[in-house]
Image 1 (cartoon, rainbow, N blue to C red):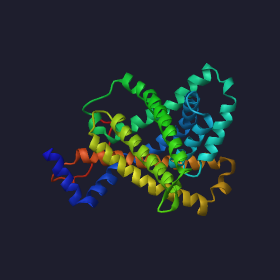
Image 2 (spheres, helix red, strand yellow):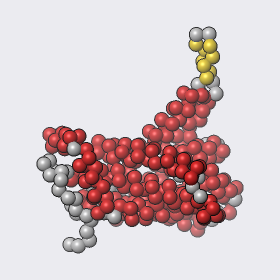
Image 3 (cartoon, rainbow, N blue to C red):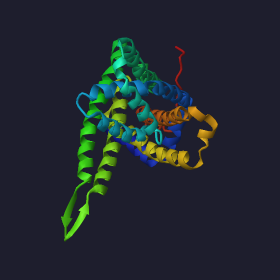
Length: 300
């Protein structure tokens, strides 16, 4: 506890030094290259994962309501492109009766790829943990599918809560002889629900994906850093796509895929940057904040 307080005080006294240390370590670990790999496999995984999730949850929740919730919160992950993804998803669901076991198994495989690559990227960022303790390969094989089940349960809960908040927004209260609409309150609560869900998912990733048993406080700090940076970034992406971008002219029919890949790469970069914050804080030595970070190496 005393060492933790000393580290916190050191970071608060020299925030820019610590930030520079994180950025140097991120560059030394080829963070942008790792983010590109995570984004590529996330692009392959996102549609099969959504298809499996919607097919499973449509037995409990109305499909139209489920797609509406997905569309709203996909805007957090792929700003400006959620409508195109939901349209493709709805088109597939209209013909889901032709889905056989081969297609089901292949979708399960592709939906787990992003988690597998993310775990490998986390191993690079937290290489000081991997050198001490390695994870059993069976645990690594089970994690993606357990995570898919947890995400499906979370989506079911969010759909139910979001439906209640939307119903509340259609009501009004009478106060001081005036009728006050609850639409603004409902919209604010939906936004806070999305942000809280984002922080929760990021925290869970930082707790589960790296090897070892990390601190909940460290994971929460890394999640808040990544979530706040993503909030700023996704608003810039929305502004860019709606005003300055000529991506449709350049890429034509590939526009949606390129825009989604760009969004996913930026999101993956911030996700790994948040992990790098946690890693450098764990490796921080009191009195040695200016020690250059060591890059990941495959040499014995």
